[in-house]
Length: 129
Image: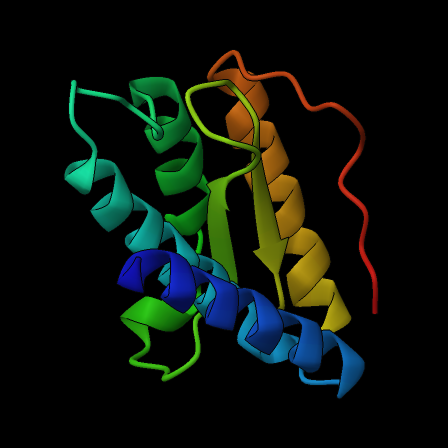
């Protein structure tokens, strides 16, 4: 389908960003993938839910810490989406701040927010610079 093809292109773009040292584009690509997944979810019959209410809360909570969107930046610095096939309880967030300190600060805020909402991290957030 068109949506699956688009999601494949986004995955290849993400791979290329990592390879080419353009990690700052990853949050936007995660957001784009999430939007495509939500469109795909809407095209499924039988009320199949990929992004559950719980997953939506996790993703939106992470993205609420993105200061770039209020500053009118073209590239978001926080991207988040559910992982796996959906319908479960696992999500990821990618933070690419303007500095390592900003990245660390926002990552900690996201982790603290998730924990305060009752979500349990699988592992500590890892910062790759």
